[in-house]
Length: 340
Image (tube, rainbow, N blue to C red; front, top):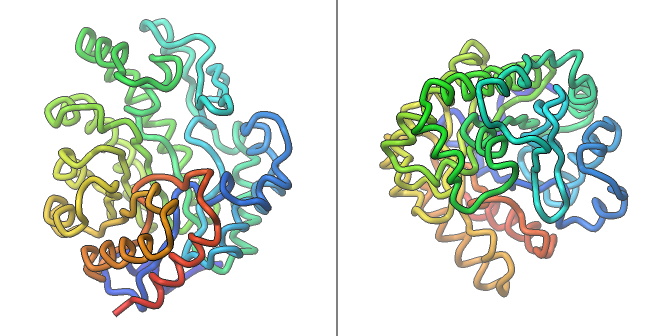
């Protein structure tokens, strides 16, 4: 379905929507009993390769919560997995790499993504969802820094020591690596857009581990390369990172329409830092485990700080598995009802 006007898309364009739109990162899966009922066992990557399953999982939170947008059920590591780099996603751990990136020789292990050949299951699922959904579909990809950190560390990390060591010791190799990953993410995003996604989000989940100086030197150029590569498209582009309060001004310099904000920075201050761009966020996911009156007060605070214009209500990061889905339904209802 093509959307000429929609609260989510209007907010992405920094306009005043008919109501404050809301969706949740990781809304598809994890906390939903209907997801657990159909997900089955096995790797999430195996599930992602089943279009009919992806269509159902992506649509579940739209039906359950009444959110204003669906987010495609996938993972940022899918392009690397599909092109044979040797990655897996272990339950309770996250992405892991069989042979971590160590030298220039490993660049040859990262080949260009041909979405039609490598990820036809993504294309099929997106087309099916566009035909079924009555809300916009958000596609996504991983930002080069975050993808590179997984490849170098071999999995999640607390300090990104190997990543930082490589980027400082061999800046040329670092740039070659992150530019290759940028091109892969851009190819994935373009395919998602061409097949029907109404918006896309680039996740730089671990950019907050960098200083502002290092972010601008080592992460921003490749991230800008991703957004530049899809700048000829008309869909809104969202850029999100975790722990990036000190990086918001730098992130806003990138060619993205919306800046996602985690819970550490109030949205009115975040809007000042991003020079008035549209913003997305930023309820702390853990608050959703508190009694409803606490959650409701925090929802109201976020709405007040968001200011109405160009604000997409979201969590400051993903839905926690322990969250009661009924709480999220009530959050959506309150956001919609409290719109000025």
